Image (tube, rainbow, N blue to C red; front, side):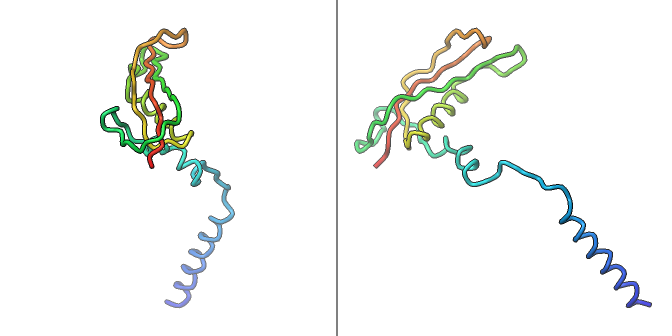
Length: 124
């Protein structure tokens, strides 16, 4: 009797596992390219003019913005604006950025907007 029950449970378990392979196919955006792109800003360090290594090579200007579009959105802020600028710096191959200013600007689509400007550098 034990053999019949264990075979039945084994058969049921096997069918359950096999049934999972016929389920719906799920697509996600989790792949190496998207993952690297999502975390690109973390590869760009922030420096001041005084702390930037002498061997840094200037690549260009970058900017990022933070927009408060609705009354219940979080306020426009430097952190979000700098993160977007660091992502932009990563796209041009930079590993460092020196922020020159962060200012509020008027924008018709935002209740308030903060823009941060910086210089992107390659570190050697």
